[in-house]
Amino acid sequence: MIEEKQNEEELLSALKKGNRDKFAELVELTSDKIYRLALKMMSNEQDAEDVLQETYIKAFRSLDKFEGKSSLTTWLYRIAVNESLMQLRKKHPLFVPIGEPEENEDSSLPQPVEIVDWCCLPEKELLSDETKKLLDEAIQKLSPLNRTVFLLRDVSDLSTKEAADVLETTESNVKTRLFRARMQLREELSIYFADRV
Image 1 (tube, rainbow, N blue to C red):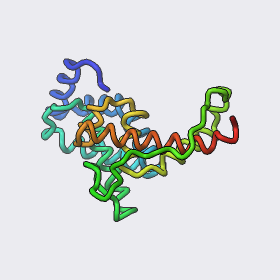
Image 2 (image 1 turned 90 degrees about the vertical axis):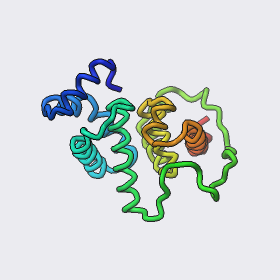
Image 3 (image 1 turned 30 degrees about the vertical axis):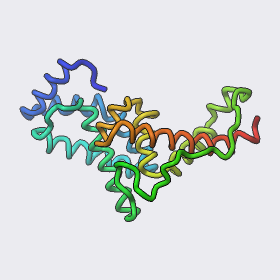
Image 4 (image 1 turned 120 degrees about the vertical axis):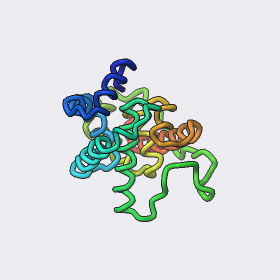
């Protein structure tokens, strides 16, 4: 997050006056985080670059509408998430928007099929390229809704409140979706690690 509130207020004031150098500074401060989120959401470098570009274009065009109710970074995350979800919707027309769980969505919490204790695995096994690839694949298997929450909370390190602000939903919805995502990922990885313990 862009840290100091006073610095952010000064930056926002300069941005609203059309200061392009300050906008370049904003891009410099935030583009790595926004790109990483887009890459995890889209699972494709070109699509992530498109999301990144559209995020800053839309932000620049909408600066006069930004009221400062959230931080600039949270606002940029919101734009990036919305842009990612729009692109995913184009590829998958039956995509469901972020919000409260659908009525037909199983409201019970997922029960793991297999739990493996990873305590005995060497650290190099857990940090291997193969494990990272498997985790990336498992993240892509999450529903777009749960993937978004997981990426915002556990990859981008946003708080539950910040993630809820980005997604314009409730904190309890974020917590529920995060729990479901973590359980699904744990199950996916447990199956993989079961052979290695």
